[in-house]
Length: 385
Ligand code: NAD
Image (cartoon, rainbow, N blue to C red; front, side):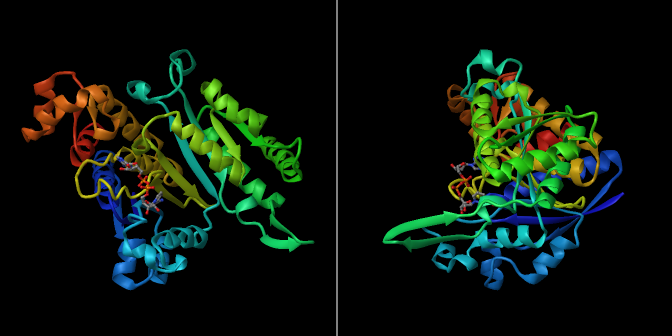
């Protein structure tokens, strides 16, 4: 089967990490008999340089015409880049907001998975980590407090600011369905997070989630208050499978969940609409501090490509192959610099300076931890799908 993938390489490390994800996808295609056809789409700083705006109508049309979009990251150094002297609607990030809106991407998915080999990066105690955790935060992305009416005004001589938190039943139902669908592909458990003891919007959230749950008898579900969820994420993260929640709660909880997994270079994400279409991207930014050095970690982007296979193309076996290849490479001891244990960095800089290819690396150092660059990491994963 042929899949049309829109590719937004973007700025900074974006082109480097996207190239590795395409390398892995192409290997999957070869092995499992699929064809991935890529359409390059300009967005962010590179689009400003080429067209004067961060996202053109042609770019939106190209994204809409794709089966899914794989993205690197956009933006530059916000202190020094000339892009940030432009008015806000012309800056790189405005392109991403416009694209999300144009594609009606209302559901954001962020997995938080702790790799056995990267346990040292987890700030939690060993007895809490246990055999690790694997959860998915499903956050509503286009409603709630961040999109409600807001104003700051003088009320009887006192400055007063108002933000509006509003959800209608349709907005809740569509994200809840997405959450239960995702749970069906996982361990079949949904924890719906709200503040129903205080907020009307949360009481409606709870009611609609219960209605949706009735259509998914195989999925167990529970309700949890957001303050309790924030505690449970550090007290017992193993209990969670899919966490389903509204925009602001999800913003905060997904960052908390990702912090307990370690490096930003490992964190994939997806934004979905009510079709099979999705935008898949690493959670990190364009990392201008390391752009062009060949040391960025491509794993988050490669795992985002795996999510694309699973959620947009229903290629679960192929997605498993990528995820297992990532686990294997970590198990074999290969690391980009951001996930290297501090004590191994110096030794491996010498090994890498010798200019060995990855197989030579492995033979040279046996099962030790080996530092590799962006391209080597991509090739190692591609070789193992
Ligand atoms: P950042 O995520 O780009 O970088 C933070 C730190 O994490 C840096 O030290 C960086 O080197 C490191 N890092 C990030 N990704 C890495 C990877 N794959 N491998 C190794 N290390 C990695 O955040 P920032 O510096 O605050 O932002 C830089 C630019 O990225 C800004 O213009 C910002 O607006 C943009 N940004 C874009 C997106 C997006 O495209 N969705 C998301 C966040 C930030």
